[in-house]
Image (tube, rainbow, N blue to C red; front, side, top):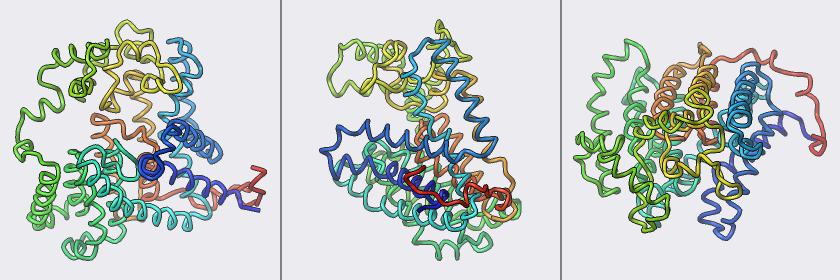
Length: 446
């Protein structure tokens, strides 16, 4: 016999740790199971969707999911004539954005709320501590760079760094005294050690995370400005130390931080016509040398501005997009016609805004922001740091919209929604208890 609430919670925790560790386990511990990579991802996605449906209660969450399914099904199947299988495979990319909110909302409004929150806080701390082992191991084995994805696995450096900063900020904020900044730094020095792994992978956006981390610990109010001025030298020293460590482990030139040409090339590209030519040749099979593969990872902002041009002549156009499934396929399923035709434009780093425009058009962009706004619109009157956390989350979300597709990773979505809901006042718990939740059922009967 197991209580329904606990069954949902333990099932979710099992899925959560699968999402948090399966990449490292398959790549480093049992590499012989690498052929099961795609199957493992599919099992975790299906499991997440199943638990999400079982815990779906709130009308806002139901509306968000319903609108998404209506918009994308019409665009993908009716308008762009994609198959049902391609559409279903494409939905998996948005599983976290669709179902993490209802799952987390169920957990933090459940009558066992306090028990579950303490458990998730412990698990978040354990996850962050594991990165102190996994990322240095990867840095020694592969060198400093994108391989440093920690327990999330190779290529997940951006995702793990984002979780490190969000999770550590949340854990510290519970113990932080904004009235005594320096004393709080001393008392939380062990938590600050959790940030170290973020400097062992080549995630440049971490410097923005780092600066905002210490800035927002002051509190978002006018009275904090004077204290901020007093502690500014400390922040400059911390940022300088972080930059020194990063530059030494990554063997990069310090001038890149002040070089306008570097940012131009990094975000927009220097000679985009040449990049396009090489990318097209690579797609046609004319380039197979390893050193040429950099060309198929076009700069982030270039892709965003190129999105509307790619959509010209498609049935969905800029309003509807070309349907889901464009960034999947090629392993167990065939790629879509659009993906085959524009293969090199869909490879490499893909900003979230670009992903949404291509697959869901402007309607998808509107849905995305509506989804997030509906999740953070609660007002908090109990947790002193909640506004700081929400500002931190909001800035990171806006950065990632133009920087990468981390918000399509379910494990990142969990941290985002958990921090959003954990730091705000919820509906009184007694109103959230449903008669079905206090009944016990056999696990096999669910």
